[in-house]
Image (cartoon, rainbow, N blue to C red):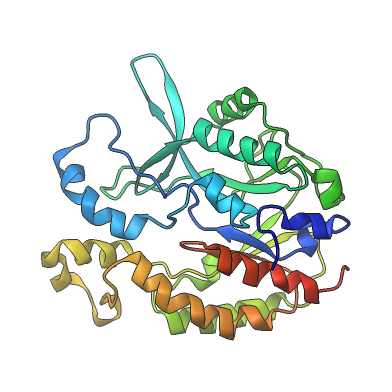
Length: 304
């Protein structure tokens, strides 16, 4: 059995794009908070929305200790008082502050100097009640600077050994901010968004097939989770909306965890076990067992 907290020590001469990396989807959603003046509608929706917006059970440090090496952060900069704003992780609701998340990453890297952590950052979409999130990237840069976390911008040509103890920040939306690395990221989500587990498996099989011979030095991210539509989620806790849903919008799951439990075995057996190129694999409710299944793929892949 591998040590999940320091597994990268076995692959020191590889580059990140030559590894199968366990990734947690919406990594900061293990914690939700009622932020600021919560409107009545948001207070009513909060208990129901957690069923669909909570994607992880472990803290950031707990995820990393379990083997995760790729984090997915959605960000919004929010006023904390009349003169000060702070950046938070968000997903439907406000999660933990970015500064707290960075502290957990730094603490893990300090405790496990052989490891490196890839961090995807992008602006959050909107709250469950429809408020559009906005991210101030200068505020993010300030939080990274204040954290004293070590990071690498020129990461493509560096081995895991050379990146040890550092974070590698990537921008899926190609933000041109100084702390982001030179890695390009290619996510499956835009081509494979689906709320039915079997249809998702078929789409991911096709997506992986089209990428099998790509030889560039990008980070490929296979997102193994289903994504219900806004209407499906709202109809699950606002019954009157079910009259607006078409047959294709009917929700067969009561929460995201039950959807994940039905989806993961399909994706693992139909897609992941057949992969022909290293990819990072994003998972909801990531566990050490899932991480080990992904990490073990590196034992059978050859360094390119």
